[in-house]
Length: 139
Image: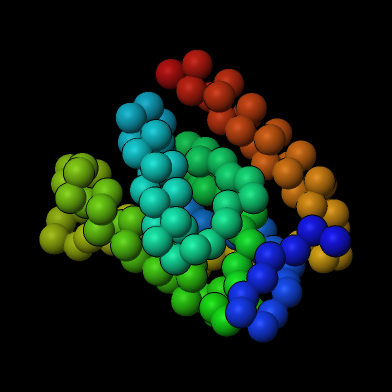
């Protein structure tokens, strides 16, 4: 059984999470795309959240995260989106409109990786990565 543990708990809580930039702008390519990837990795490391698989596409982010049962998914997503928006704004102040530091849209999609296999989610994310690479080469 492939699972993680806390002091008194064994768990395998995985979630497929998708979120988009504000107004679904197709802005994540090149250097910004690489920076978004690194920022998300760093933020997940700070909270001890495992990234099982992930892809940053031009207009959305896919993550398959293993989140401990002591953490609420909404808190984790809020943390990742909030802190990454501030970090992106610090590095790319021209990428946001006006005085607002909003980079991500308000909502997100989340599904547990239980009704489908982990391999199916990984395969889907890999397909999204390849699609995103093809889009990047067209630019």
